Every structure is written in structure tokens, then in C-alpha cells.
Image (cartoon, rainbow, N blue to C red):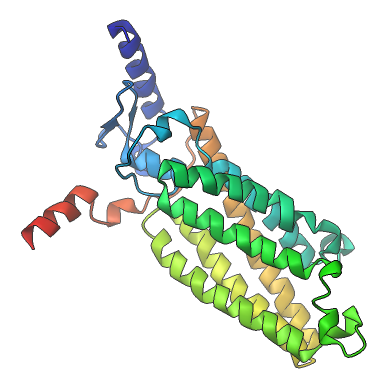
Length: 285
């Protein structure tokens, strides 16, 4: 590349950095990581775009492929907004059968595509998140597909409605969601190294998982009024989660498109030791 071409690219990067306030971890005083192509990206900007700390990887996949993270988040957000609205009973909606596609296509397909490219690019945490939510949607898609006959298997007569109201069916799903709640809480702890918005998404995720588990448990004990209240409460918290996901997806797309908007995410990485600080600590041990 000619020296004029390199200068032109560096000028573009300088203009991009000016679009973001220092409070987002994108200011001019931050340390920069320079690629062989002359482009510069700060570790903080990388973390904002990929939701994972910047690490050294083999190969140039991050330069060759587009950022897959917004693609996976988009699939998750559309599915989550739909799911939350139905759980709250908006528009007279009562069941998820009519939107079973969100559990098999809208969510999982985009999440799995994003997972593959996150893995190729070496983005560990975002890869983990994409895979986690992909299997979550797929597992609930199975429950919403009558041809699998899961609910009917809990009825002596093979009646799906009777099976769906049985103790065994609802207690099993309650236990499943409880396990998800514990895992989502564990993941929430690790999101505290990224940014406030992403952390709040997982905070809402593990809370809503426990609440939905409570709703299924109340169905198993025939306390239907309380079950409905818990379902709507879980749906409301899940809706907040979806809106936060929508916001952070827009933030990432705006950053990728180099738009001159300042959308805060609440960078939390500065509360943690930098990678070079950790390396120094290991040397001193």
C-alpha cells in the first residue's frame, strides 16, 4: 500500500474516534491496537463491537470477515420481543404455537451463524452467548411443536391439553428453567467485565428465568391465578431484556456504520485489570 493510502486510512480512523466520547471507552487517550493494514482500533472499541475482550489470535480472520455479533443479537432480539409480548398477553395472544418459527429460524439460525463466525474469529465470550441462546430457543421450540407429542406423553389418554396441565410436565419445565437461571446468573457475573447494558441484559435474563420457573411450578400445584401473574411478570422483565438487546444491537450497527451518534453503553472494563497488568502480575508471582 502506498504511503498516501495509509495516511488516508489513518485519517479516517482519527475521524471515527472523534465520534465517540471518552466515557464510552472510545476517546483519543485510549491505547490503540494497530493492524497490518494501517487501520487502528482500540481494545475498548473492539469490546463494544464484539462484546468480548480483545485477545491475540492466529490469522487475520478479524480483518477478512464482517462483525457477526449484531447478526446473532438481531435474531435473539426479534424472538425475545415476540416471546415477551405473548407472555404478557398483548393483543389477546394466548399461546406460542403460532410463532413457533422464532424458536427454530428467527432466533437459532442467526445465532448459530453468528456462533460459527465468532468461533472462527476467536471471540470467546460472544461465541458462548450465541450458542447458549440458540439452544435455549431450540429447546422451547420443541415444547411448542405438537408433533413431538411431549405434553401428550404426560397424559394417560394421550391428550395434549391434559398433559400440559399435569404435575410432571410443569414440574420438569420448572426445574429446567431453574437450571437456566443459575447458569444465566453465572454468565451475568462475567458480563460485568464488558458494559452496563450487556450486564443488565443478563440480569433480566436470570431473574425472568426464575420467575418463569415459578409460573410453571404454580401450574403444577394448580395455583393458576398466581401462575398467570408470574408469567406476566416474567414476560415484562423479558421485554426489558429484549429492549436492552435492541438498544445494544443498534449501538453496534451504528458503530460499524461509522455514524456520528453517541450512544452510551456504560463501559465496565476500566474497573478490571488490563491484560498487560495481568501479565505483569503473573511474572511477579
